[in-house]
Length: 437
Image (cartoon, rainbow, N blue to C red):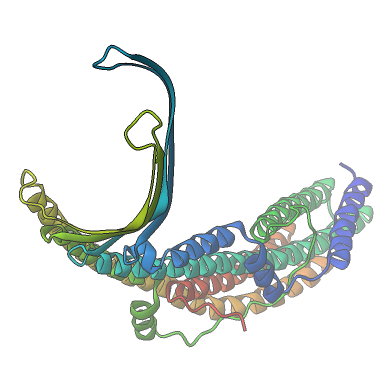
């Protein structure tokens, strides 16, 4: 590939990047989070499930309230009757019989071994669990949006660095051509400069591809057209004041997994109460007001109308059920023990997760300090090397090494920023305390 084609390719890539950067509307982090909270499908599903759990917390669903029904029944028949009397007289009759009943009936369990109280407590705990799961989904979605947004910022800086590398490689190629023209270097130096420029251009194209894929990922989180173009900010600010002890304390009080395990422990206790309730008798009352009307033309009574109030009391008790009651209670106690073990395991897992991310957070802060200094030194070294190459005091390999060191320092610095920010956001997610304000 000759010099003109290379310069044309670089120019086209630069124009595309510049046009997209200028035309794409700015998407702030706050706007991205607000759009996700409004549109994200996982949040909507979790909201619906939480609403269902809240709707279920009623006295009727727990079994406190009576069941009142309106009942009606109609029965009719058409019969041909032949009657033979004692005196030998025969009567042939056609009888149209009808019988209809209608009324209001009430069935009410007034005592079931306190099972209805246990049911109501269970419904309230499930409501709390639904709210915790909703909050966890929201925090998880917001964390994904934030991490993706800062990933885009980091990639934007990588793109800027690669474009700067292309400019340096283009300058190096121009110097090589000038030196070749006056006979100071061989054609090999020009070819090497062209190869370096091609390599830098390929790296930029690869980075642009990854950048576009990450933008698609962001649009997917925001539930909008995947090809929607946008630009992001250019700053990653890491909070360097996080303290491990404070994070662990806050997680024990606010972490969704820990809170859910506590609720599951209470649900296991309630389950035992529900099972034990079957040891007690079940007492209920029945009542109703009924109207009935019957017609029997061939009977002794041609028609009959009746209405009135009815009531009753029912009771039943489990005397023997094949020792199943004992089995269910024993299993329920084991479920309580399992819930307690699960709660302890989750607390240990959360603390380990916090410790791991806190190590990454601290390492990232140290790497940021080192990286910032390395970028400044590598830039000074590259500028000096470029001047020396211009006057022919260093070789092409030496300036390429200076350029590579500068790019490597920039890449490590951007990665350290993103690593620390991602660890910070994850720690906030674990403690259920993400706040972008």
